[in-house]
Length: 189
Image (cartoon, rainbow, N blue to C red; front, side, top):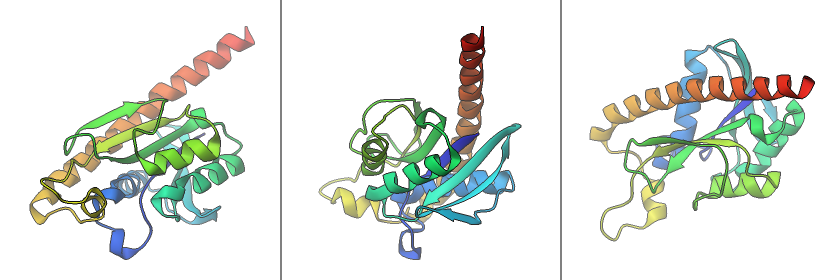
């Protein structure tokens, strides 16, 4: 089993903001695979299902972004899984709007949700699906920019970006599953 966690802030006022692209991605992923968010553990709603015949638990922290680690730790703990079975989808301000990149370990690059996860897990060996939301132009405050909704003319592109991120998660999930299964087979020999 793998955990796929989308980062964002709970509440209607944040629903369509740049900071919530992680929530949008896992919502689309869950919808595509008919997975319903119906369970709650440690401030995290989640649902179980399969993607490409791989068991998954898709979740969304119900904490604010900078406390995402509380939910990540709880869902990994209740699932009996280690961080290498965690995939996190989140916004990335250092990427141009629409760029998607996979990162498998390392620092937080200034993303406070990732920072919280690393802090709570005391481990950085989890995968991230980094979704570029761009940087504010001019002197606009970074926090105000992240907590602002996408512009009306950006929404068609946002939908395409979300679809691409969902595809990226599927590919990443298959790659990780293959790597973990191969390493377990090598240990058994």
